[in-house]
Length: 457
Image 1 (cartoon, one colour):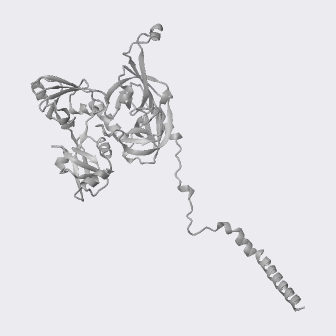
Image 2: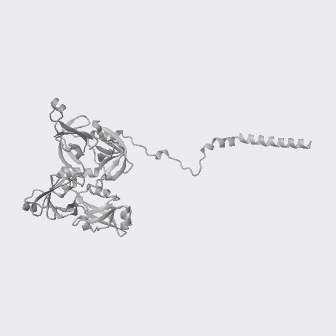
Image 3: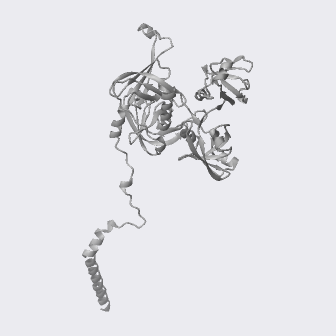
């Protein structure tokens, strides 16, 4: 009997507790807590603000503002090759080679910038604007080293043109548009970002390129076209791609607008590029150089030698100094340095920050026209007009020091030609590198004309 009473008592107590729990569960206060439980956030959670995510700009307005200033350039040259049997059968005994590219109108009176390789060898240059007007263009001047050429068309009304932007202010990750005429598809616009700056595609040549790298699609026919920023400013001239297949594979390269603008101004005013230099021979700081020279810096340009009589020597720079900044441009690689200096003129003054023996220093350097250069390990200088007259020379460069590379050419010789092209000033050597020299012609100290030919690999 007692056992039955105990069981009943436990059952009554359990039922009461259950009833009380159910009342609590369905109470308004508890219900509100359950319904709002999904708004509780752990204290270590950081909300992702969607408004802070970078989104592409609306390119419609920029494209419409820019596209009319980009033209189609047709290079028509007579072929020296004999015509094929079918050519003769069709009465086309001598064929014409036609190359195409792009160009950018940079002034309302008809000056156009393009690449040198677009117009090379042309007999006739035909320019077609976005509204299908055709012009025969005149070649004003060209600079093979920077691969820039300037054309001029005559027009009776102002043409749409692009303003130069400041390529030094462009940033990696910034959106850009590439505008040109790939595969004869006129007025094509592609978008991408700036992937890198100060790219040198061939560190073994003497050109010290400093390209803007983008992932905007560029193909054959885009050469000479515009690279514009989201303000519609010209920040580059599209020039090259790297490709295993011959087509676009994700990388394209443009000449920065600051360099292009300086070259354009020189070509229009002087017919050639006037290059101002600091006057150093340098190399980028590398881990191997840091280890061998026990350097305290991991980036910069290490000075190997100073050119005598140039701005660097006058400003007190020395061998083994490390240049880290010029004006407001940080110098990490040699192409950073050359890319900035290429945008300057002879006579311009730049502030150079450098390290010497671990101490930061600064000096102002005046850029000067190069007076002497090294070429194939020879030291060369320009002749004065009086010296040319005395030697009855119309062209040629003075060999100051012979180099071990070409022991045949002695000091006091006269280097006359490279690849059969006459040399008037040492600036003419800028277009040649170790990979493209076929022959040299020179006068020995005894006045004998000699020729050296190089075997092509």
